[in-house]
Amino acid sequence: MSPASRIEQRVLWAYWISCGLAAVGGVSPFLLAGGSNRLSGALLPFGLAAIAFGACALLYQHGKTVATGLYLVASLAIVYGMLALLGVPLRLAVEGICPPAPANCPIGFERPMTSAESTALGFAIGMGIVALLTSSFGLVTLYALLRPPTSYGPATKAVDTRTPAGATPPLAPAPPIAAKPEAEALPEVSSPQPETETELGPELELPAHEPELELPAHTPEPHFPDPPAADAPETSSLAPPPPPKPRRRRVPKVSPEPPTMPSSDD
Image (cartoon, rainbow, N blue to C red):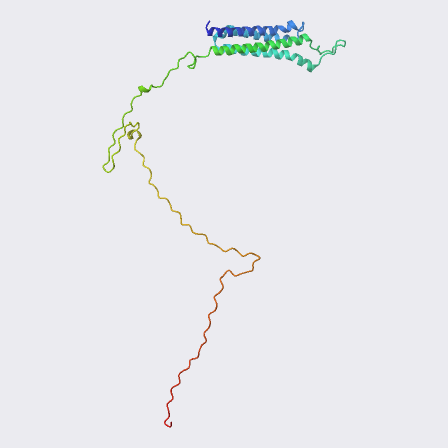
């Protein structure tokens, strides 16, 4: 048996099991509730879910769209049936229940739920949850079955697209460069150059180097004497004055007396 047929059988069995569980959940209130009809509201939605699951088991080969639509219908029907079952104890808690058996039950009140009704309620809700889980497993398996094959699967063979080293075409040698008369001849290059001047275009000239600006010479900061302390006596910051020069006394000029001539009497 091929793996695809095994997956198809899993999908088929999952939908049929979900159909049976939904049918059992809808009939269980009548079988386990002891003749009470307060839980009979779940029969119709659970029966609709069972029909939708059976249609999934028969029509899942028509595509994922049909199977998904029927699964959504069945899921909504089961959820509605479970809410209808849970609404019975909620209604009794809100409206009130009749007093114990010796007392008369007022009009509009209902009897409390019996143990059989509680058992049927829990069993029907459990069957609905298991039916939803089983059908979701079948839907996931169906999506895996109808998934288109990809190149990453195990059945595909990886293709090496790399070029072998021996088949690499040799690079074209660079054209010879003519030497200028005033410049020295360039040394010969043994390895081929992959990029030439014709491929890269003309070389770009760098801008001329600008001279660096010189910083001004460093001038020493003027040094100011420290201010005198408050306790120190006040002193003059200037140097003492030079001593006064001695004054020369003025000598009066005396005109020379003319020489006396001797007299004749002498």
